[in-house]
Length: 309
Image 1 (tube, one colour):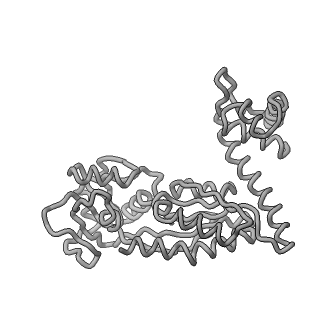
Image 2 (tube, one colour):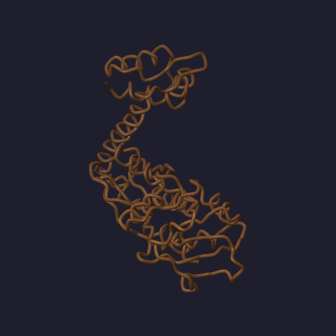
Image 3 (cartoon, rainbow, N blue to C red):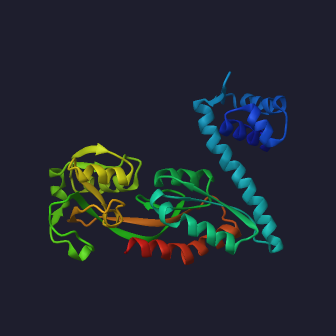
């Protein structure tokens, strides 16, 4: 296989059409079709299903698309790394971030990057921490800001922010808590099965961390519903359908300004940990190294300030 084949395949797969991909790459459709077909022959797998409406990825194509993006990204990094020998900080930086971090920090991240590196470009990919780990491994992103759950081979992580997790229920009529110090009632983790939980699916970092700690304590969680969006979880909790396990800030920053019952979890206390992650098998460019330093200096303090309000 060669890079032209991979580039052709990626464009056709993402645009869902040979015609649209040919226009984007400024080539003709037959030439593009030949490149993709050559790739399929060499791999001995059908990557695309052709139909009258365009193309769709086969299971093999879905896997190959992720690898192709990683390979093309690595080639771009290699060229960028060599350019930096001339003292020019340019090229492209791709960072993956979790939805909660994106909500607070994306604007400042992009603004600070463009100010600091006017000769470079940035792309921001949003996804759950599990997906961000996969993208790092494949080389699709240079770095990621994610929630740390387990040690992952070939991934270097450094914790930059820690939040305590609480059991959140519907308003019980008492004055709303504004800080962790106002928590009066506590509950041991072993007693949590008494409460039906509305929590994210298994791909979510908080769910994985909670289940891991519960398993270590021999606790079986009582899961009522699986919902990934925090706002939707709070909607259901507010209606008394169940309880959530979330940082206190999730209730304080509720857009509807609703009041909730907040209970501290003990024995053990639970924490979510935000970390900066990179892949140890992919060499970071000088741009990536400097961009990560910029992120820590300018963007993370903003996120910490918002979360501690």
